[in-house]
Image (cartoon, rainbow, N blue to C red; front, side):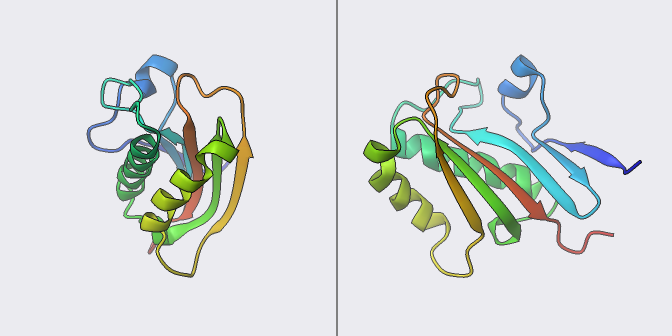
Length: 132
């Protein structure tokens, strides 16, 4: 049986307790990060779409940092969008700020109808650098 360890960032937001999940699970040198949304510390969504996406990336960075990872350590990314066609331009503006140059991780974008009051979610797998 492999060893798994729950991971939480500093200043964790209220959604982890409200919905009963870990921010991430570390297994060996891999980090499996739960979907991160643009939630404020009280768990409420940021109302502006672009700001919500940016906050989701910032929440993701905090989870990654808890194990010494950065966006450069991502190997798999899945994003969920409630209205991909209408949101694409704003999303790409934010995404391009966080990933300004190659190499890029692989990426899958999925259109969905519900994200518990949010309009965007990002779920990733990362390789932990220098994992013992």
